[in-house]
Length: 134
Length: 134
DNA sequence: ACTGTGGTGAGAATCGTTCTCATGTTGCCC
DNA sequence: GGGCAACATGAGAACGATTCTCACCACAGT
Ligand SMILES: [Mn+2]
Ligand SMILES: [Mn+2]
Ligand SMILES: [Zn+2]
Ligand SMILES: [Zn+2]
Image (cartoon, rainbow over all chains, first blue to last red; front, top):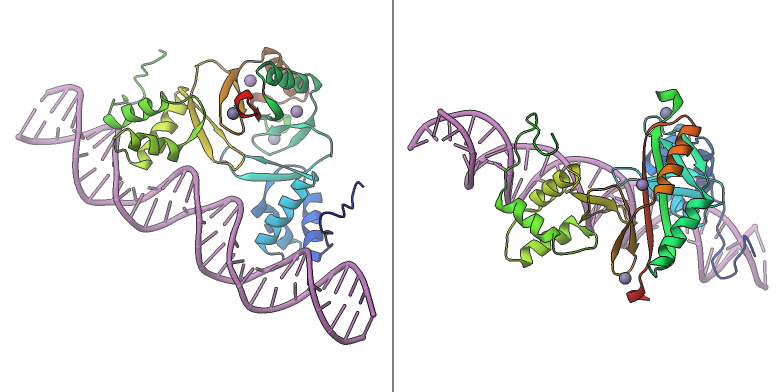
């Protein structure tokens, strides 16, 4: 029951979706949909921008990629491990490190409970300048 | 040297900027620039949308309002206390509570240092459903 | 009053993202 | 190995928040 849910229609392995997955495998930092679209073009494939957006959204929905927003509000994407985590991102080159913070998880839940808020989610991203970029 | 910086030109107290400040004083949750623009209209004032954006950006720069992005990437604004803090936001009605987390602050700095990242900043927002909205 | 520096606003322009819809693909049953 | 329905795609239009342009206004100081 992990991968096949009879409720939702099967996801078909099309050339386009493979191209997006392949592009995602090629970088470790966060990239915009348009940058990913460009990467695919450079790999010689042709995939419509709308399809790139659709595929990224589906992958995010499925938890296979993380999406966050840069300071301009643009969505940026990256393939990620499947466990809950946050990111330490280099403001200059984009180098990204996944971090976990059990204490923070506990803290956010405690704060929420204390104020009677339910159905909690949170966002936490850390930005800085990586050693390479100093 | 806190409020008057001879370098930067004086900020003139115009009718428009007063209207934005007045609107900001009228709510506790986060609102979009357009919603704030509407509020001003409802108060009988007339201020151009571009001016609302300009004023909000200036206030944010000055640290008098906080700006964050909702899940759609839209900028939303709220007048805030001047100390560093984060927000517990009701996903349904927008009711917002300011929270502080010294432990989290320490944790983010420790993580960053551990990986050699410098010049650290972070974003942390908590979303949930408030008691009223349950 | 004169003038220079800000400030304003209507509308155009930007630009990331989503939508439309006619057309291609895939999975599947026979 | 063909037929069909559901799914997927892409070109371009549409959307929508934000920013830009630039002609015009408002104030402070002389
Ligand atoms: Mn977390
Ligand atoms: Mn903090
Ligand atoms: Zn870097
Ligand atoms: Zn609420």
